[in-house]
Length: 224
Ligand SMILES: O=c1ccn([C@@H]2O[C@H](COP(=O)(O)O)[C@@H](O)[C@H]2O)c(=O)[nH]1
Image: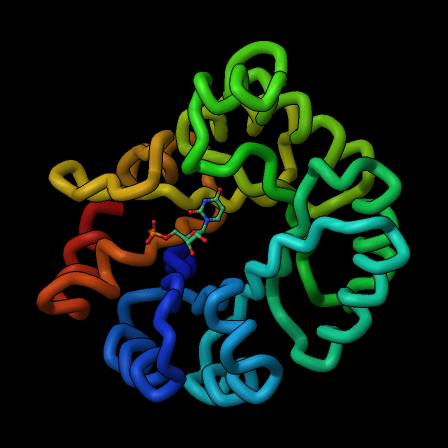
């Protein structure tokens, strides 16, 4: 089985991101480039990181009207990402148009409920029920829209997996048992997420901010 860990390269400097990717290359299965990276380095940065030789996950979390999101998907076609994120909250038509505009080899996955949100955030936003309920509702919508899968926390991936047998499930918000949560509110361990059915384990700060990133990546890999 291939390594399910995608390292989140949330670093402001391109040279530092590439150096980290090269260091941990043997212990991760792919590299995730998010908003911070893409806003700073754009297409050029993605091309440079792709030279490291691992699959690229563009975590852009696109969320706009269908026509605009489809246009953005077409604009990133040339980068040949393995995975791209959009927000399920953009609605069914937006998700359908995003998938139709994506490259043949790109998995389009929809963020359900960010792992930095919990039940009290749902109530504050006027969303009925728990974060778990909302994640399941949005996962159903993403499946109906014909997406490849969703992004959710390790708390709901098991329940979503039961309803969507061949879905592709990206799980961020992962922390080793003794890890610092930071802004993550629905965290689980990488092993728990994998056992519950995650296809991809997104891990950032537990590796990128570790004193020894290689040792941290190796230790996480050994738990899987
Ligand atoms: O719900 C979500 C969706 C995306 N993310 C992204 O994953 C990484 C997590 O980084 P850590 O440092 O391991 O917390 C980060 O790039 C987020 O943008 C998420 O955390 N939750």
